Structures are given as structure tokens and as C-alpha cells.
Length: 344
Image (cartoon, rainbow, N blue to C red; front, side, top):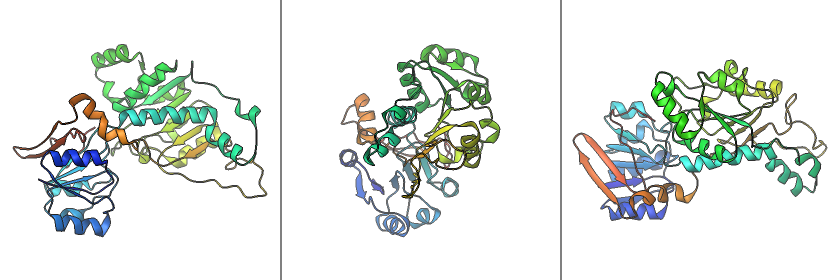
């Protein structure tokens, strides 16, 4: 089976695919017209991507039967176009959950201790121990998790180890009292009845909801008005689940501190400006911090996560009924049971 990998990928993963009998074509820099040409030239039925955009034109260029997203979200793939063509779309939910959970805890610590700002000032020649010795600390703080899938559960484990109380709101528990009770006992958390209640009771809010039509702009002005003054808000989910105009207003009016890991906006200071000047009028200094999406950007995420459980040599390709199914130990993909639809 021909497999076109059109993104950066670990060599051990490519080797495992080849060992499984796949004819692997590795085009890590292919995107746009270059990827269209690669799909046409190779005639590969399977396309594997991570961050590369997969468009309708690409689907029409060759003989694709399956598009695999080596990650959880499929927002970089035109799923509707794939559905119309009978092309299956597969994702790998949960395989980067530990990496993203670790990043989440790192962002919380960075906000609390203001680590990036401390380092930046030190490199600029300013020693301000008194200012940067101020922190709430995590022990005894309440962490609220919006969403409780693979990543949310890993964050809860780590937060508990820091001595934090953990609150959770997730739609999956609204009508399932049995599952709610079992999860509360297993993870030592408290599940609340609404997102508003979670915001009201949390010192730190971490967003882990999947992006769907229903969750786009979910964290909006109506929800943010329930946040505590001075609360921290962390978003390691998709950017589109946040209403950024509402968040900017909350930063200004409620002194909310926020960390978002999808894109970085540098706030540069002119030579004549004081280091004490706020990032923007009315906002607390360093209240907003943005960075690139690096939640799964560690080599072990895709290579070791599954091999630790199933062994380094397990790999298989098979065709089952109408489902073109592609699965190897380094890319443990869950095939969608309705083509063109995404479940997390």
C-alpha cells in the first residue's frame, strides 16, 4: 500500500511503516500546489499529515481513500469535501495527551511565577527579585477544567499532584450520573453542573474542549463574566473556542491573566518606554501571553506513546469491508465509522 507522508515525521515512524509493508513516500515540505502534484504523481490511497492543510483540490488530484491526521483535531482537513467523495478521515485522539497536559502545567507555572517576563528582564540587564518573588503558588488553588477528554484527564492527574483542587465541567456528564460518580471517585475531582459554576469557583481555568460547531466561541463574554477577578485562563484547545474580543475585555476589566499556545504576538517596547508600562491600556502587565502550538512537538509523542504498550514491532495494514484502515504502532489511528465525520 502506498502511503504519502506530507509533513515532518519521526524517522522511526517511517521505518515502522516500511516494515509493515507500506510503500512510503516522504514529502515533509509538500503543501499547496506542491502537495497536489505529489498526490497526483504518487497515486497514494493514504495521506498522512500533521499541520498541513488538506483541500478539496488535493482530494481531486489523485486516488485518496483515507486521510490520516497524526493528531486529535481535523480542522486542517476539508472534512465535508472528503465526505462527498467517500474519502475516510481518521485522527489519533489522545496520543499527544500527556505532552499537552505537561505543557498546560508548564503554562500555569509560567503565569504564576511570571517566568518568561523574569527571564526577559534579566537578559535585558534588569534584576528585579522583589517583583518576581510574588506568586500565589499552586498548592491549595482550584483548577477548573472545561472539558474532560484525554488531555483533561491527564491535566487533572498532574494538578492533583501539585495539591490543587480540581473542578470539571463536561457535557458528557450532564445526563450520565453513573459515569459522573465513577469519574469523580477515580480522579479525585468534583464535577460541577455548569460552565458558569466552574468559572465562579476556579482560580485557574484550563480549556480542553474539542472544536465543533457548538463549541466555536464557547468561552465568550457571557461565560467570562463569571470568572473570578485575577483568575488565570489557559487555552491549549483550538483557538476558535475562544472569543478573543471578550477575553481582551476581561483581561482589562477583571485582571484576568491568560496563556494561549497557538500563536505568538510579540509586544515590543520602544527604547523610551518604561518597563513598568502595561501591555495595553487598562490591562495588567504581562496579562496576555501567546506562543506557538507546541503541545505535541516532542519526538516521543508519536513514536513511544503506543509502542510502550504494544511493542516496537507491532504494525499492520488491512482492508476491512468498506473501511480502508491503516494502523501502525507509531500512529495508532481510530477509524471513523461514518466517513467524513469527526468524533473525539
